[in-house]
Image 1 (spheres, rainbow, N blue to C red):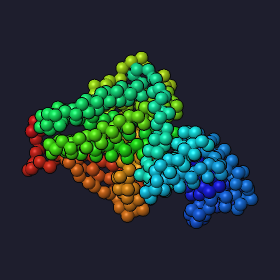
Image 2: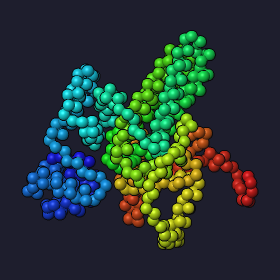
Image 3: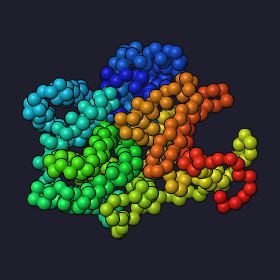
Image 4: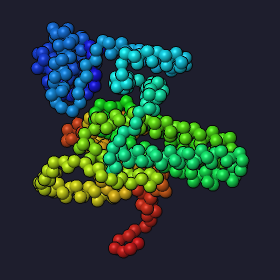
Length: 473
């Protein structure tokens, strides 16, 4: 997170709750933050500049003291935003606003180029990140990212792709991208045959070839569940949000391309399939030149070890299988003790509890009162993909941007006490899934989190009469 004189105290406390207690060390004036009513009144309107004056400090002194506390807690590093950075941020906002209002993209590109003379690409990424944190819609951030990539494309295209050992997760993504490019090239050759041979003659081959390109969806699922969570842990939240929205757009283009084949209209087929090929090719470029270098620079060896551990469950595409010399450095081994836990109605060991949850005939996930995913049951044949990278991730970031508002609506209703449960049912791959959400509260009624339960009720719906004896049926 970035901090400046304009940063609101409420934003700081939401991101770093421990500051409620620890800011008193900076000045006794901040002891008011411990009072819930006073905190609600002051924090929402007070900026760093206002709070510093109230405590007889300079904004720089207060920012420095807060940064020292946050950095001392480990994890996220608080970055100080200068007045110059704020000016550049305002310039970026102006560029996006002009583009959003249908302004001259050539003029916007020129202004963007002028800005690039003063700062490097990494700072542009940081400024994009700040725009997201300030609430700018992902759709508008995408405009900036597309402009950003466009400006750098010539230079980026001349850089070599990241070189990693065979077996490393990034190498696996790269191998899949190579096969995707071959699949796209094959589809392009088939499109050229449409007018010569006729749609009816080419469509069967084209349908098979298009299926190869459509396999990219699993590639994206792995990114969303494996790379994005660790990017967020490093404070890189804008690129995952933007990329996920592009993934969803490509998923829609896949659907349209497949539907176009049913029309047997050569022009419609060419248009839909070409749009898909272009979108997938552009995403490959962004992965190779921007995403992979970024994650290789930021992720630790232990994080890559965790990512590698979760890959097999989510699967790969086009025959790619991780294999090679790369082996993650061994993490320190800690012995798990089978301590007995006394529960309300019995006692069990950690080993027993874990095994019991894994054997439930349903999938469960638990999100705490800070909206962070703390647990999911690692059951066989999960209905929705999960990997260890999701632990500690904000639940809002575990869903496509288009459905985040539904997730938030459920959580808000549980947190305020307006609802204690919600349920949905959907048809997926020939099965009927019953998805239920339950507010988890302590004995005093305080909200502790949300429990998600997903169950396959396909066979349950068929039950009639009674069954009182053990048998095969």
